[in-house]
Amino acid sequence: MTAEPLMRMRLRVEQDIFVVRQLGREVARTVGLESQDQTRMATALSEVGRVLLGLGRHAEVTFTVEAIGVPTLRVAMTHPARGDESRLAGQLQQVGRLVDTMEVDDGESGTVVRMARRLPAGAPRLTPERMDEIHAELARHVPGTPLDELAVQNQQLISALDEVRAQRDDLARLNAELEETNRGVMALYNQLSQELEETNRGVVALYAELDEKSAQLAAASEAKSRFLANVSHELRAPVTAIIGLGRLLTDSGSDELTTEQRRQVDLIRGSATDLLTLVNGLLDLAKAEAGRIEPTWSEVDLKAVFGQLRGTLRPLATRPEVDFMVEEPALPTLRSDEVLLAQVLRNLLTNALKFTEAGSVRLSVRRIADDAEFVVADTGYGIAPELQERIFEEFYQVPGSKPVSGKGTGLGLPYARRLAGILGGALRVDSTPGAGSTFTLRLPLAS
Ligand code: ADP
Image (cartoon, rainbow, N blue to C red; front, side, top):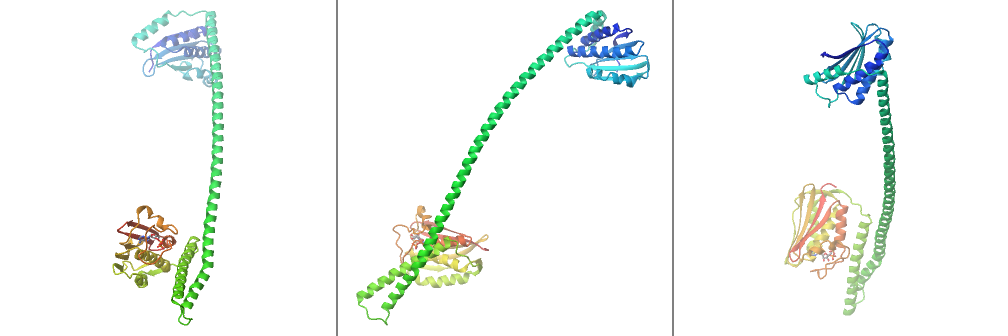
């Protein structure tokens, strides 16, 4: 929308450039542009004025202010010569930067240069009353001499220089601060990377130590297994020989022995048999620990295994107070190693019979999810909770628990647990002292 012009003036001679410059500043000030924008507008006007006057003839300047929408000061400078649009636009390129918009075109009355600058948000509202005041103020404006204008320009130059110096000082200060911050950051970074490096070195050393320790442990454990295997192996032959010789001595074909001699030979045979059991147990355990037991996987017929256990252990279950029961398996087969499985169950059943005075010893199996669960339950002495893990240690026997029958070496359970692991399963115990124990062997149905 075109508003009522605030001011008009005609440029005729070079001096008028000073006048339009002053007027431009005055109009800009009156409508509410800030000081720097006033100077910008004044400079733009004098530049355009100078170029237009250079074309010869007169130029017309019109100031308007738009109160509706975004309040804007507009200036149109008209020159009667036409067709200079593109050349002018080129000459005035720099001027365009001083205002928000600048366009040059061929108007009806000649070439027109239009410029606009938006008023700041804080400028007084352009109410009709304010517009009247602006008109009145501008009417009172008396143009100064070129000397006045020169003084004003000098003043502006000085303040612009001051501002530039202040900005340069600010920049120098900021740079110094930045440098300081950079130094701080670098120091922190160096400190952190040093700490990190130290920590890393510590961790590496720790790992090396751990590696060394675990290598030592592995070597020690291997040495122990090798020692046990060798010693047991070497012992087996002489002990077997002692048992054989003892049998020969008491054989009916040998010379008659006195009762005392026979008693002593029987003692020797008994001790040698115990020793052989121990040696065999040690050998088995050493083999299992050295990983030298390779299971032979096959479909195991549980009915057959249970039948065999029932048959071989029946002779041990001699006490009428103890009910020895091997239940019918609730599971037909399982993929495992038959010999090792039977060995584990035999150890558990032998123990149950050894440590049960009265009641029952019972073997059963059932399926739980993808596992087979073998349970050997007895109503024997039971095991105190704090000893329930210790009984799986080599040579550990619960103090004071005398077997009802037979003897022990303390190697049966550690071996059984090893075998359970080799078969891909686990062995655990639940027990209540005085009420009995339940050993549970859990094995996967398919190895
Ligand atoms: P052992 O040859 O002495 O039976 P094991 O390793 O088989 O060796 O068992 C270790 C110890 O665990 C036994 O000496 C016994 O004290 C205890 N024990 C094992 N099974 C039972 C059980 N069913 N009832 C009570 N105590 C048991």
